[in-house]
Each structure stands twice: as C-alpha cells, then as structure tokens.
Image 1 (cartoon, rainbow, N blue to C red):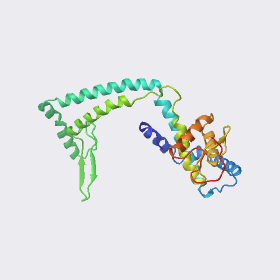
Image 2: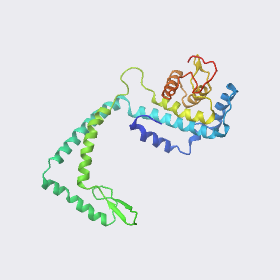
Image 3: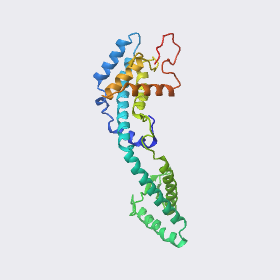
Image 4: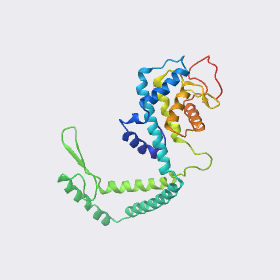
Amino acid sequence: MGGLLENAGYILERVQKYEGQEEEFVPKEVFDAILGKCQKQYHELVFNLANAEDSNLQCARAIIVYNAYKDFYSEYNSRESYSRSRAELKEISKLANKLSKALDSASPHTMEILRLSDRIVSDEMLLGSFESRFGHPIYRHETNDGAVAISFWMIPNIIKMIDVFSKISVEAVKWNKPTSKGGAPRDEATHMLVSNLERAWTLLSDAPFTFRHHKSEPTAPATTFCWEIFKHAEPEAEWSKFSTAMKKVIAMSGRKPGRPARASTEKLENP
C-alpha cells in the first residue's frame, strides 16, 4: 500500500478494524452499478465477472485505506502537530542523550548497584512471573529439545538500547516535517486509492490500466471505473486530484497515461 513509515501501523489498524465489514464501504449494488456502466460504455470489452466479488472487496479495502490516510494526515500532520512534535522530540533527544552519557560515565560501583536488579528479576523469573516488578517482560519459549528457555533484558542490554534510542531521537528531530513547504500539498490519500484500485481493475479486465479523458470526462475503461469508485468514496471528488493521482500511479509503472501497456492500433486521445 505504500506511504510513509510512520502511518503504516495506523493504516493497518484501520484495515483490521473493518475486516469482515468491507461491504459497508462499497455495497454490492453500488459496485454492480459501476460495473454495469463500464460494460455499457465499453461494450466491446469482455469483463471477468467471476472475479467481480474479489474486485468489489478490493475496492472496499482501497476506500478504507483512503479514509485512513485522510484521517492520519488530518490528525498528525497539521502544522500545530508539527510544532508540538518538534518541541517534544527535542526534549526527548536532550534527555535521552543526557541519560546515555550519564550511564557511559558511571563508576563500576554505580553499575554494580544497578545490576542488583538483574538478580532480583532472576529470582522472580524462577517463580513463574511473566513481568518483573520493574516492568520488564520475562520471555518463555520451548526449545527444540522440549526444554523451556527463559530470558529477560538485563542491565547491559537496557543500557545498549538506551544508547540506540538516544541516537534515534537525534535523527527523529530531522524526520519531523511540516505538512507542506508551500505550493500544493501532496495528496497521498487519492494516490493510494488509485494505486489500490489498479488491482481491482486487473481482476475485472485484461484491458490496460490507462488514463484518458476528454474535457474531464473519462474515455478509457480503467479511467471510468476508478473515477466512479472515487466519486463513491469521496462526495466532494475533484477531477484534478483524481487526474494527478492516475498519472502518478501510471508513471510509476513505467507506462504513459494515454498509452496501453501492450501494442494497440486504437487511436488515443491526449490526456
């Protein structure tokens, strides 16, 4: 599905939330009407109706992802959120580095005192605990010979991860970006919708995934199909956003917007 790394968990959570409820997003009668329009407008094409149900499901999931992208950017990528995150990340980075340096310069006696915690957790581990009094998880798993292996993060492991985290926090300050730096903002939601609809289209037809139009009216089968689904997903659908997304998705595939992926003698209109 693509997109920024930080929103991957957010998107996945949304997809899992609506698993089994996909029909709410593209009811069968809506999908059938869109497919019927394509069949009527492009009557020369043969549609693989055996895959219609799978294509319908793919369209619904595409809309779920589309809505999740919109919500993600609305919640987390506003300029207010950017300013707050920048201040928080700087504070986290400062404290993490301070802690890492303090541990690195601690005396052997200080470290020996800290390592008393390892002995305490070892005792708790043998008593069958799954979490120490300090909050570390205690891992238990069966080995190949049937024995049970038990482990937990000891002080040297924790100190190493604090050092790793301090380095991550320095870089995280750089990763935090405002919503846009001027000009038109990127429309990740529509781009992902079209990208996922390409799969839905290929389930229905061997016709190439192309973008063609005349005065903002689709003139290619895949264009018509995706535009109709987009209008269903977005009551305020804008042709300009859809057009940009179609062109980007097709460009990423190495094809040109107005040309089929295979040889054809069909006369093409300029997009």
